Amino acid sequence: MRGEFRMADVLALIPARSRSKGVPNKNVRPLGGHPLMAWSIAACLRSAEIGRTIVSTDSADYAAIARALGAEAPFLRPVEISGDRASDYDFVAHALDWLASRREEPAYVVHIRPTTPFRDPALVDEAIRAFKAAADATALRSVHEMSESAYKTFEIVQGGLLKRVGTDSFALDAANDARQQFPPTYAANGYVDVLATAFIREFGLIHGNRVMAFVTPPVVEVDTEDDFAHLEFQLERTPAFVQKLF
Image 1 (cartoon, rainbow, N blue to C red):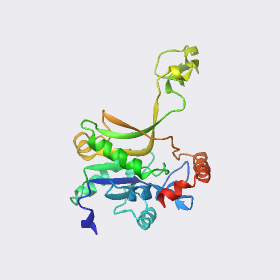
Image 2: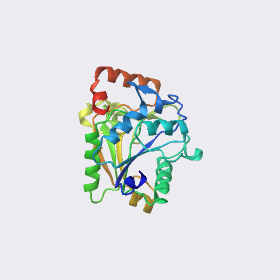
Image 3: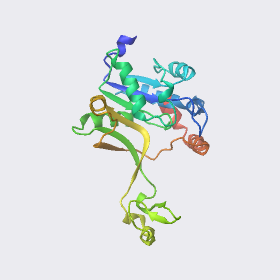
Image 4: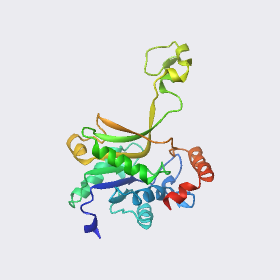
């Protein structure tokens, strides 16, 4: 079967390390009757643009689950790039090195985080096509508009004083202006990131300095037990999420 995948132009890469702390074993925790990472795998398998789906994990058990769900898990990620402080570049480069050694390196890597489970495969395809058509973008990242502009937020500095983010101002009254008076700001949300292998190889970076924005509906990323509870609540209210993927 491996030869069937050799010329995949677009490869989805799903990171699923086993030692999460905020929500233990979150990547395989059941959500709507399916392991969390099953949602991301299903979205990739239903994509018209993605030719191959690989799960990068440090766990043989997770790898077996991924294969049972229809993804590939042909290698285990080394422990030294599977901890809390490991960067996205580390696991992407590791996967590309493995693929390159077999002459299977793709032109594009679609970074799909299992912690953002509710995806529409059609939106994933739209993002991939948009990045392919962008002549000078170094990468594409999905974002959604923040409910409150970041320009209205603060940081606490030495001495316990509040300072407006992005300024040197301690005068906070202007931050109370109507939100419409501030530029909208966006948060990266893990829905779909599209990376160019040639750029990664040349610069040792995954995003670079000309990153194309791909705006999605607001989504919840799983970092805490409260986040997971919110996903379960969303699923109760919108069972169509299941029907779209399974």
